[in-house]
Length: 166
Length: 173
View 1: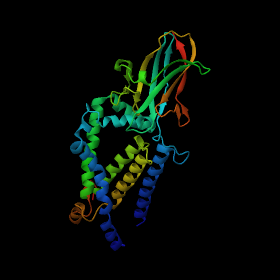
View 2: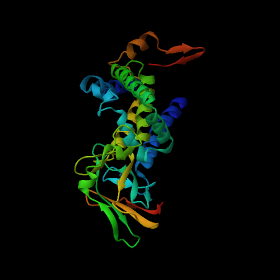
View 3: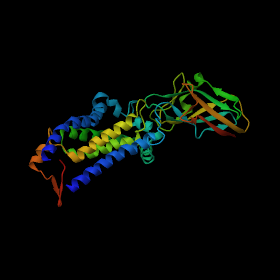
View 4: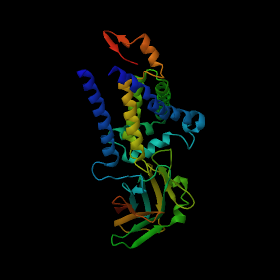
């Protein structure tokens, strides 16, 4: 009988422990509860800018629903004071040739839809965009907007500071 | 006490068949309803699901997911194996055949998914609920076995000590 009680308690502890551990890992449920699936989020880590006006936009989709894309409708290159150097609008982003989008994973690729640049959840893509002029070396900010009008989510801004390289 | 255990066993199929179906039906969806889910060249390929797990997957599991995604033949093998496990042990759970080991394997599958895609779910905290409840339910059957409306009850009648391996009696049913 003693053995049975020990076994039952062990089973109870394992199952309950898994439930709470997963709750913490998946949602920080025992701390600051966060549901990362509610709204789209992006990360621009690894983005590069060149003085000849070429932007290697490194974009990964890190938050939001899994069954529906994130849709980028505006990409901006800004001076540190916030003035726009150049920007690509929805029409331009909706018509990027396939050869200028390099996806890390072949499944669920980021692609132009005709209306926006669609980035599926989990995908990490390098998107090559060209400005029609050269820029001087220095610090710039690259920023993106989703079709929902946001440029930040979960306390994370979708922008990154870059040095223009020659 | 013996009477209580006997009575309790009669209510277990209420949960057991549903738990089994949760896994077995995944196999049915990928082979009968939408076979494209197992076709690597289709946009419905379930391999793509693993990409959506990546952003907030638990560290060690994220490494495994990346490794699978970077090796498409391996990813395919993994998906076939995962689907086969769901089919076999989901069916066993419904039939009440080798209920204890089936429960252990199904709990492993459910909790395993919880570490990868458990953070997904735009309505509620969906995938975590699925992983936790299915995991705990399947795990419970490791301890209860199934003694009613099951194949195991027949096996139990004939071999009530389980299978003897070396000098241990392993209660597989």
